Length: 496
Image 1 (cartoon, rainbow, N blue to C red):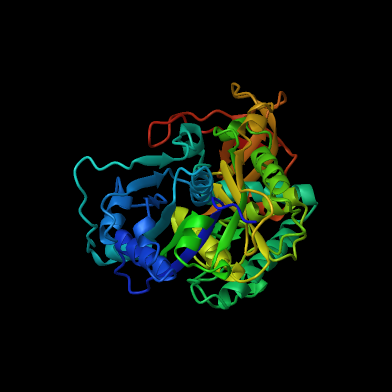
Image 2: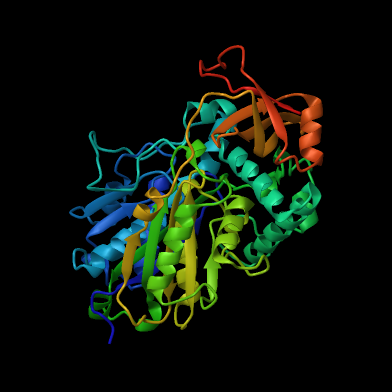
């Protein structure tokens, strides 16, 4: 017998606007209305909360604007903090509230209009946002509000996600014993498989399949960004996309004559965050928070990773997928995305996971299959995951965070700059013309403290690009002055 309070997803919708005139609230309302239409509008009167995944827009309480569009003026509203983990965290929190009898039905939605805003900038125009009441504020705020990059990260360039994840790639490469060429070939094949998935996804932003050679080879439309990443190995934020989900209890769904084969069941969820100061982490390419939260989530689901039919792993950059693959013990050739991922399906800032879950709903409906979904926020900073199924689970839904396990683990210390250290990870960034510009290095001193350093020496850049220099000794020279923003400039690294 199914628990009457078991949380289910009964409506879902993905939205891609290609006319470059998108507005986020309008997109969210359109997606929410379409998700409700999947219930023939039966559930509208039961909606008690409209919850929004935060985006790059000025709204303080967008859920209120969406609710007004839907004629739901009296409902509660919610908003997440920033992070690619935010959707699954909010879904888990909402599902837990439903399972506890605290909430009957809710809408979770999100949208971004970065393509429209970039077109605005290029054409000297300014598309308007919806007006909002003074002092607007959501009733519920979800997530951790914390700067994920400090001044030292920003001064070194580590605060740019593409640079951080490219640095993590060098550590992954070294651990696997690959040459730079072998590593690039492997991750390009990984991304080519994602592009194949996107080519048959009608909601994907890029629906053209790309070969590994296309992805690995720089070109006028595929410039080098930060080694080993070309543009086609990075998240595609230049999209106008949105999605919405309708959640309720099984009892509410039955009361509104929604069939079991239209429902997708929430099975279990989890999450945790790693040390938010990046320099304190044990490794740049591994995540104790992911390990702990995923182990616990899978145990409570009654599944192993091998018994789950589908995966959708957060794919802002290949390093994110590889971290999950390594931790979960899954092979490179197992499909890791249902959508095509953030490069090809589209990466609307924090909103990708809303689309991924909507797509998963369509995949699982009317089946006995199940899926594991993973969201990653920041710089391997915040992690969220959930297990969902087209078939009713035998156990109640459970959501638990594993932060206590992570907080009990040792961390690296912060220390004064040493004269010598060992190269732990690095990347070389490129200018717009495709020329190597600067190396960003993570250097461990002899006591294990981590330091950022940079180099612009042509010979150093060449050596770092052509060889695996992780493990090399590095001489660190303090910068003579602050950077252009008045921050302490990172030291210069010299390979010894």
